[in-house]
Image (cartoon, rainbow over all chains, first blue to last red; front, side, top):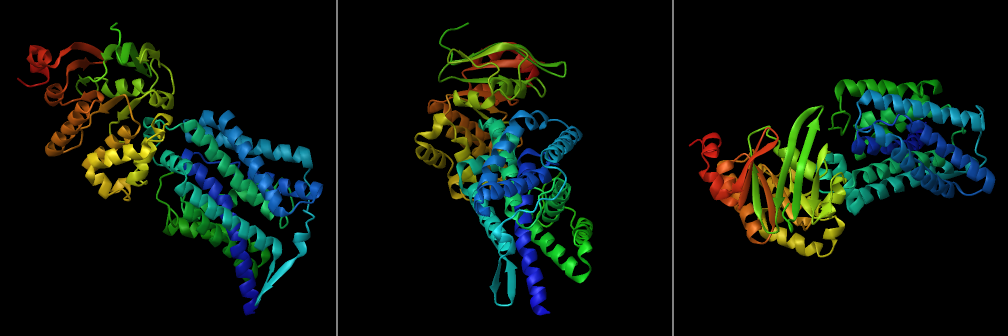
Length: 289
Length: 239
């Protein structure tokens, strides 16, 4: 019994790190640009498909697929911002909602047209391998995804904290007018920020491709999941996204074990409601929406 | 138009939603000068600074820096040409450290070379900032934040520094400190455009002054002339 609980808890934490990476992408975009990317789940699904196709076509390890997803999705996010999102950054929120919901429908539709509605399991060796550690027996894919996500979160955190560009990004998030005053190239910062956010989602998608079948309809779930994660942690907070991811990952795992697997998706929302009642700004949230 | 002016503004108009904030403003600043633009609240002082720096678009008029037309350029290109500002409300980055704020001020291409010397210079000028270099800028007092905003502008190695109401929100004692800082920067060779409500103190510091009323320059001349002008005395100096 103990070993079952430990295993469930551990796999919840592992998946939680990946959720944390997804949420981090959403929260960075919001924190800097004050726009809410309703197409974030689609970007995760793009990553899942990148994982699926690169493994199927070239039989590369998932880590390589994740690197490809990072590069492709960064470029995608950068261009999307520079061509479309840019025009709506200074518009009222409801304009932005419509644009992003439109984009999300467009992306989902494109995936449906291109790949059809059927789930496609990624045929990776990784899907069937496990690692044992004392009482724990874990999917290798899950361990690898979590380790990579954790490493990326740490690297991104260090990059934002210590690099000159990270400093510019934090400055733009703190005070846009202040940024213009010192001659910060705000449009470039915004495009790179959006690229980083999209890359986080894409990498997370590629990492979990051995665990989730590629399917266009996954996107809605991931968008909602990212929202719940970010709100639990606190909008715009880096540490909050990580903590939120872990909380949601563990909550899902425990719900499946304690109740029924179908409760898995319900518990995070129950948690969201409880947290919104007691801590309306999430664990670390300080910023107004 | 005078030749050899560092910054020349000719017929500048700025409108927000149809209402006119600046209406044909012309002024010149020569290298090494300290000029002031004085006026009451809502006269268009901040609009003037923000349109020179490219943050607010002008509807007509020409702004030239070193003879180059910079009208309509984005703010980051204008900063690269050596125009820095100490903005109204300071506009520092409160969640970043004091040193990070200063380094961001020096992130322009024009300021990259010798950045550490400039930082050293700023720390010598404002010892408080040096003591608090690792502290979050938002935890500084109002006066210290104003020093940080000035330090941040100096970090970009500007040819002209524009001050937008540096004394606003400061105690009378700190206001005097602020004016002394502006004066000492000018004495060290900086070209300064000072925009202020505090007419007496600004004119006492400046070589020349312009009086801005309802978006237009209504008077200009040397500081002495303006201080003796009966209109200025009545409207701004309470004499």
